[in-house]
Image 1 (cartoon, rainbow, N blue to C red):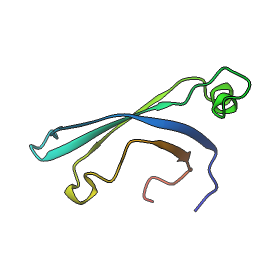
Image 2 (image 1 turned 180 degrees about the vertical axis):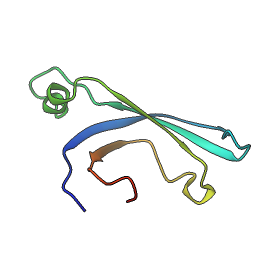
Image 3 (image 1 turned 180 degrees about the horizontal axis):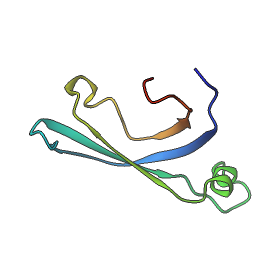
Length: 84
């Protein structure tokens, strides 16, 4: 596996239950980039590098439902091939 080209620190905004396009029960998770402006804020350096951003995922695998809990996450962008 390649090394990450970008690491973003995000926090979980919401988890919504619904149905995917094929009618299966799903969860939609939404994460936002962390933000901090005061010198002592631990998220300040992250917000300088990644000042804004959101990530939305629809999870239709029922075994994965409930795994994403409120809190902070590091999202890694790792290059891969089309068939990886």
